[in-house]
Image 1: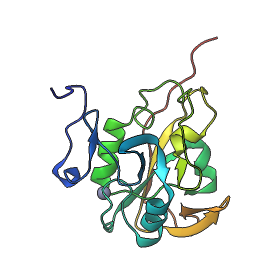
Image 2 (image 1 turned 180 degrees about the vertical axis):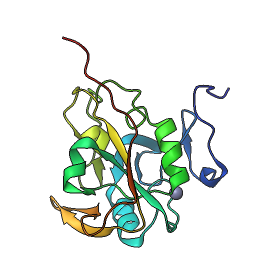
Image 3 (image 1 turned 135 degrees about the vertical axis):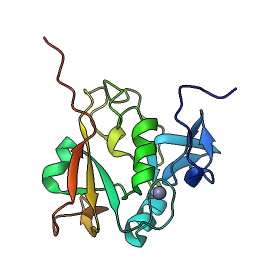
Length: 175
Ligand SMILES: [Zn+2]
């Protein structure tokens, strides 16, 4: 029985495995046949960043691409997560409670990760249990691959983004 609360998986993502009614992004880590939402496969992530592949579908990016970024990443103008097709970013915003602003707090239970092959995603790496941060869609025509804190990252420090659009902006609750 399909989960009616899950967004419809677009045809462009029909090649991906699914878990709980959601398409599993190409860079999502897998362990023992299980998809580890909240963790990325380092090898696929590096291949996507350097090969201009989309982090969700794994196919080549077009002339318009997006980076989904946390507020705290914006001043540095780079993110360790690969760029996305606009349609793949749209699906991610609909499917991911953290990016889409439907989660109040970060995951409180750390994932069981093998640090040699996987890394937490930006939405899972922050302080466990901390309030969720606003996310932004940064529209670009290009990015540069840099090394940031020892890992590859997509940077737009060399170019002005076409547009930066807030995905969510939640005011903190009153004390
Ligand atoms: Zn894509």
